[in-house]
Amino acid sequence: MTIKWITPVMLKEIFINVSAGSTRIAITEDKELVELYYESPDHQRMVGNIYKGKIQNILPGMQAAFVDIGYELNAFLPFSEIGNSEFISNLSFDDDDDDSPKPSKNGKVKNIDPAKDFKIGDEILVQVIKEPYGEKGPRVTTGISIPGSLMVVVPNGNYIGISRKISDKYEKRRLRNVAKGMKPDGAGLILRTIAEGKDANILEHDFNQVMENYRTLNHRVKNRKAPVIVYEDYETVDQVIRDLFTSNISKMQIDDKPLYKRLYSYVKTVSPDQLICITYFKSKGSVFDNYNIENQIEKSLKQKVWLKSGAHLVIEQTEAMLVIDINSGRFIGKKDHEQNSMAINLEAAKEIARQLRLRDTGGLIVIDFIDLLQPENRKKVYDEFRKFLRKDRAKVSVAEFSNFGLLEMTRQRIRVSLMDTISEECTNCNGIGRIASKDTVITSIENWVKRFKKKANDKRLVIHLHPTLSEYISENRPKLINKMMWSNWLYLEFEQDRELTKDQFRVFSKKRKDFIDENI
Image 1 (cartoon, one colour):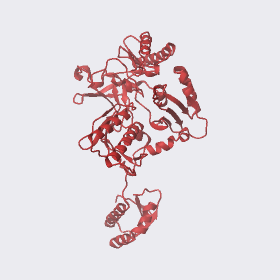
Image 2 (cartoon, helix red, strand yellow):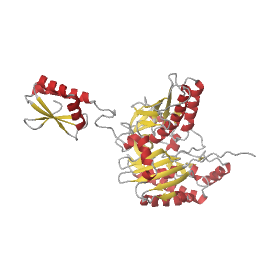
Image 3 (spheres, rainbow, N blue to C red):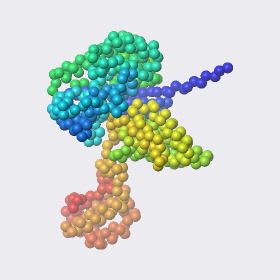
Image 4 (tube, rainbow, N blue to C red):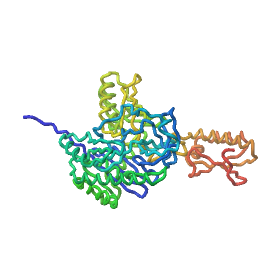
């Protein structure tokens, strides 16, 4: 008797919550939150949008040009992105690849002479491949692509591409034959993974929609003056459905009826076999609360992330990089130190891979795993971590452990990170995540009083403080305050003010009953 092992199928689901201020899309794997997309009036996506821009500056030293696309910051166009279609798979949320020839590994385009090929004021057609971030404008490419639900048209290409994730050679042959009958002259056509098994009529319908967008684009390019947007990609929720609602999604629930009806109609057109998976969440309240997503968001996005074993991660974002530290915490192992460290590191590797997807963090990432003495154990952690990262649609590059036991990696940045999207810099701590201690504030008050005495004659002052600080002073520092009054020969009163933060204070003149400038 032969025993066949059945690999368990991962339960992948999509949940969409609509509120007055935002639309949130959560993707779960085996009921665990792995990706979260957020859309609000203040956070509109630019990736995928096509602009007719004007070259503002050419910097041969940077091998790049800056293009005015009508945004507050000029777009950044590296010379390596001129005619480069490498990022087609990254537009929107697509994770597909085509089997067409690729550009060189270094992405460089030969024979680019900015002095001859470009001049300031030239009009140029570009597409956004990275969102603006901080004081940096969006990154753009001239490798234009127009995505549909089932395929992508590449105006500057001349090939047919089939997603590598379609493994059936007969299906690939069928799709290629269908594509040959549709491919526009002088343009490329890439069929996405979701095109697998789709009837020729459905494919043709999607192609006609893409070509209609293509014709609209050409019309706008001819009739509008730069800088101007000539093609606007779908909103976030529509992009998620277009690119991620594939056959491996077992359920999609939406708690907003108008949005449910609109998406139902869309799925009915492009993928009717998946209608059974899309449902309207009729219960009261939020679909996020019902499926424990809200709680997962709260826990997962903290600086300290606890693991099931009792160990935890500390995740800190700096200007230069993301730093992740693994601590044993409350973990109590019964094995030797090496085996305990190994168990924690493997658990942490899986969680870190999930956190990177969830937070959508890009750039340089440094991970400090718990030290392992045996090289084979470090190799196992490295291999397992790379395996967990395979689920990530963003491009990642992972180096082996350094001599100091650190693991360095980079993750492609396309969108603004989730943390930057759903939060803003604290005006009180200026983004450092910390405020002045109580005793530091008391020292600041004393210094202020000394400066005040040099310029004024008031003898009675009222100092407003946050209740926490006021109580701390009365309970722990009364002698210090008395000394401050005697040394400066004035009387101080303290009043609680809940409108102030814990490290703020305001001073009033008892005599004049008015506020005194704190910068005196």
